[in-house]
Length: 57
Image (cartoon, rainbow, N blue to C red; front, side, top):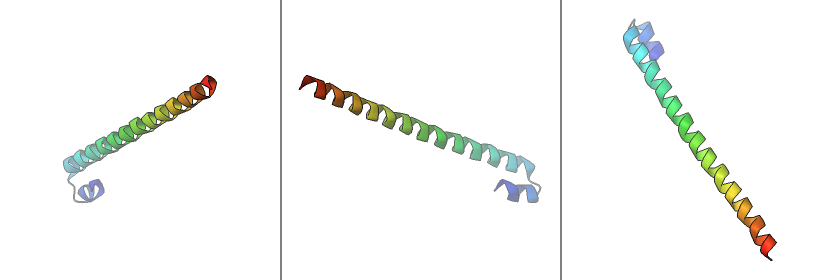
Protein backbone atom coordinates (compact mmCIF):
# COMPACT_ATOMS: atom_id res chain seq x y z
CA UNK A 1 0.00 0.00 0.00
CA UNK A 2 2.77 2.42 0.88
CA UNK A 3 4.47 1.87 -2.48
CA UNK A 4 1.23 2.68 -4.32
CA UNK A 5 0.89 5.87 -2.31
CA UNK A 6 4.47 6.84 -3.12
CA UNK A 7 3.81 6.32 -6.83
CA UNK A 8 0.75 8.54 -6.52
CA UNK A 9 2.88 11.11 -4.67
CA UNK A 10 0.83 10.72 -1.49
CA UNK A 11 3.86 10.73 0.79
CA UNK A 12 2.00 11.53 4.02
CA UNK A 13 -0.41 8.66 3.40
CA UNK A 14 2.49 6.35 2.52
CA UNK A 15 4.22 7.29 5.77
CA UNK A 16 1.06 6.64 7.78
CA UNK A 17 0.61 3.23 6.13
CA UNK A 18 4.23 2.29 6.77
CA UNK A 19 3.91 3.20 10.45
CA UNK A 20 0.66 1.25 10.75
CA UNK A 21 2.21 -1.80 9.09
CA UNK A 22 5.22 -1.62 11.39
CA UNK A 23 2.97 -1.42 14.45
CA UNK A 24 1.06 -4.50 13.25
CA UNK A 25 4.28 -6.45 12.76
CA UNK A 26 5.53 -5.44 16.21
CA UNK A 27 2.23 -6.51 17.80
CA UNK A 28 2.32 -9.86 16.01
CA UNK A 29 5.93 -10.44 17.05
CA UNK A 30 5.06 -9.65 20.67
CA UNK A 31 2.07 -12.04 20.63
CA UNK A 32 4.21 -14.84 19.20
CA UNK A 33 6.97 -14.20 21.73
CA UNK A 34 4.51 -14.25 24.67
CA UNK A 35 2.95 -17.52 23.48
CA UNK A 36 6.36 -19.09 22.91
CA UNK A 37 7.49 -18.13 26.43
CA UNK A 38 4.23 -19.47 27.90
CA UNK A 39 4.71 -22.80 26.14
CA UNK A 40 8.34 -22.99 27.28
CA UNK A 41 7.23 -22.35 30.88
CA UNK A 42 4.51 -25.02 30.60
CA UNK A 43 7.04 -27.48 29.22
CA UNK A 44 9.47 -26.70 32.05
CA UNK A 45 6.70 -27.12 34.64
CA UNK A 46 5.73 -30.50 33.20
CA UNK A 47 9.34 -31.64 33.12
CA UNK A 48 9.85 -30.50 36.71
CA UNK A 49 6.72 -32.20 38.02
CA UNK A 50 7.59 -35.42 36.17
CA UNK A 51 10.94 -35.71 37.91
CA UNK A 52 9.34 -35.03 41.31
CA UNK A 53 6.88 -37.90 40.77
CA UNK A 54 9.70 -40.31 39.92
CA UNK A 55 11.63 -39.36 43.07
CA UNK A 56 8.65 -40.06 45.35
CA UNK A 57 8.23 -43.66 44.09
